[in-house]
Structures are given as structure tokens and as C-alpha cells.
Length: 96
Image: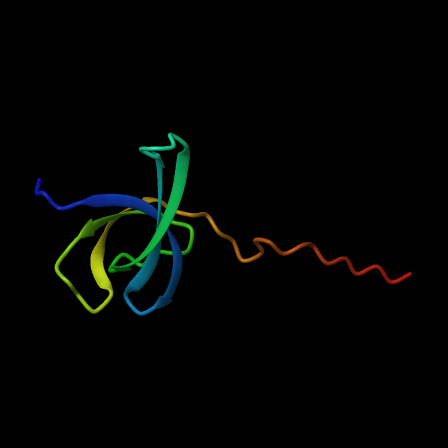
């Protein structure tokens, strides 16, 4: 295996052609204050696998593909199961 960095994150946007936005979450302890710090970072990654919003993906660092794309989606770790009626309540037709 090569020495490229590999990170795991969640897809937050797939509205661009062959590009997805991946949110990376990192949790670490502050070196001086010893508090737990949560940080989020959003990166653009090249997508040939047709990822959907909510998918957990592994991205690998690559040569610069464009001005903002320096990552490539290596694999989809877990697919998000979405249906057409997710988040939509049932509509009842009560005519009394």
C-alpha cells in the first residue's frame, strides 16, 4: 500500500458533476487546556462511484485535480438507505 492519507467522512452534497463534498469530523484533546475539542472540515472529492448524500466514504489524497479538489473517493464504506418519502408525513384525506 502507498503512503497517501486516507480519511473517512460523510457525503453532505453531490450537486456537482463528478464531485462530492465530504465532511470530516475529528475529535482530539486540547494540548494545554485538556478539553475535548470537536472539529469539522469539509473537502471536495472527485467521485466516480456515484455517491449519495449521507453515504460514509473513504477518501484518499491525490494530485490536484482542480483548484479545490485534492481528494478522490476510494470506496463507499456504508450506503445511506433513502426512500422517496423520507421525512414526509402521511397526508390524510378526511372529508367530514
